[in-house]
Image 1 (cartoon, rainbow, N blue to C red):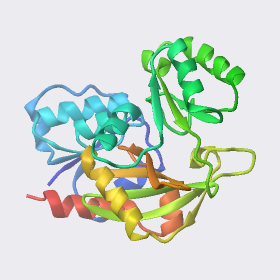
Image 2 (tube, rainbow, N blue to C red; image 1 turned 180 degrees about the vertical axis):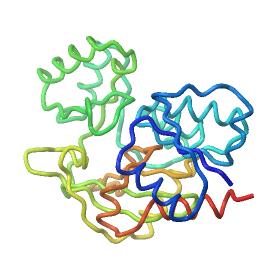
Image 3 (cartoon, rainbow, N blue to C red; image 1 turned 60 degrees about the horizontal axis):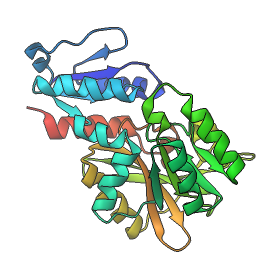
Image 4 (cartoon, helix red, strand yellow; image 1 turned 120 degrees about the vertical axis):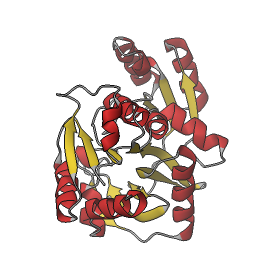
Length: 282
């Protein structure tokens, strides 16, 4: 078999995946879509699997689409990347299948957003449907802060950033939970703990990982959520609601796993390569 490792920025995760491919003696090519064009060409069919790793959601989405057109199996699929890359599409799919999500209102104009604030009540969360690492996710405590956020978002060029997901603020245990799923298997979960002088738990913002035990309800919620979006190698962020229990906050189709490996001692790249070999070797 031959693997295409699709990247735009080579981070530690991509280096570790390449190292695991070397260690497991799997032939592969690194294709940087930030530097090289990818044609609609059956020649791409020389690859059995394309591991999709661009940081840019749109580069990941379009690269997956081009490789799928040539008959290459992509991890993740174009459909899964499209759903996971847009939080509104994610929530739609989850809610339709009865999977708990934070109470959310979608607002598509400044006036509608201010009405959503009134309906939800403060404090609340406002975030756009696209983005990662906690960017543009706002904790809003009153109407003055809300109006400022709305005004600033209206100045942004990307139309998606002018759409608002208005959510309940779930402040419980000072952490969230990140899990990684591969195929139909839950590799594990860990807590991302909120650092001082911050309200978000993202590792990129200083959140620090710690190990947790996975109970049956958490595993059930995670596997069901990943199943309905069609993800194959996905991380999922879980919030713990004081009355609702586990709620799904988002899914990530190009999962980062540095913090996961520190907390769980699970070698994610090696598990990924083993999975690819077992599932897709001809």
